[in-house]
Amino acid sequence: MSRRGLVDDHKRVASSDPSAASIASTNDATRERKPMVVFPDEVADIGVTLCSYQRAAVLTDKMPPADLSTPILGLFGEVGSVVAAVKKKRRDTAAYVSYGRTLREELGDVLWYFCAIASRAGLDLSILAQRVSRMLNDWDQVEQDEFGSFDDLQSMTTVASEDLALAAMTQLATRTSDLVYDLHKDRLRDNRDAISAHLVFILRALIAVADAMEVSLQEAAEDNLRKVFSRWPIERRYPPRIDIGLPLNERLPSRFTVFIEEHTINGKTYVLQKRNGVIIGDRLTDNKGEKDDYRFHDVFHVAYAVHLGWSPVLRALFRVKRKSHPNLDETEDGSRAVLTEEGIATFVFGRALERDLFADLEHLDYDLLKLVSDLVRGFEPEGCMLWQWERAILDGFRVFRDLKRHRRGYVKADLDAHTLVFEPGLDKEYD
Image (cartoon, rainbow, N blue to C red; front, side, top):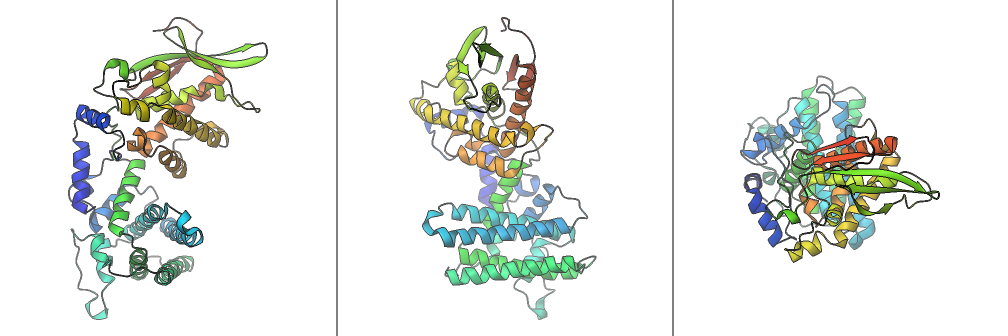
């Protein structure tokens, strides 16, 4: 996709009419769904150029501004990830089906840390890029190029081969190691020229790697910005509800309350749920020899509905499956979607048990969020952003911990305000 294509795509999604988007989704439930990432003005105005990418990357840089060692070590680590991806491809050959996507993501992360180093040293990415092809006699014949792109750096005429790839990877690893060594020897402190020289060498090697692997650095940069702003948004703007515009009997209710209570009969402990005084769903147990209170896990489905607008499990419990659209009823509200959602809840719960049920955490690690988003590829929440998943998971576990402590209470959900509230209390009629 060209840099203008990314802008046009962003504007098209951001300005789409919610009801029109819903109608489109019902007509084609299997279409490609891209998260509605809100890009900063630096990107939205002119697309992903070398300059706009660097400025946008700075906005998501959470490291201390004066800290040069962390981004350098981060670059070293990401180069290692690129090497690992190439090694895995050489080892597993055709079995490594996600190689292209993985390599593009890793190269995007390399670019991000590269920019973090350049920005701390007051270096302009577009000028560093021009010096990649400069010699001593024209080294200073450079200027900031606002519209220069990553496409301009690659000829894409190199015939890919394993030998070229190995040589390029070795060069990239060596150049990055040299940068780390000079950091260790304290040769970079207040020495912009030394940092600039290292970065030019590294960028040359990075371009050679991309050419040898037939990967577009432009696409890697664009995908990287989608990822970082999906994770660390400038503005947390929820997309339109998935089922907006559908009949009320086929929509998740905008507001609802579920009473959840634990019972023990004849030594058997289980959880019952009621909505409007009526029992919904089956009796839930932990379904595991080692008791861990997973029987309260339906609160996770409520959290998914609140923050993602998605929960085939709740659609089944509330009897609001989209029967008037057979394709959606089968593919998005059917048993496979339900099993996918249950699988995510179980998977994340296993991770949470290792981390005190995510108590006192404000953020989740990227790898967990990425794995969860990968699990829903092909389903409606594929269009949700990573920060939405993070809110859904953390909010769900906040209420889960409340239920674990009180053993009963009311879970109040508002899908328009995106709030989830727990109130301890005894069973009573509750509308």
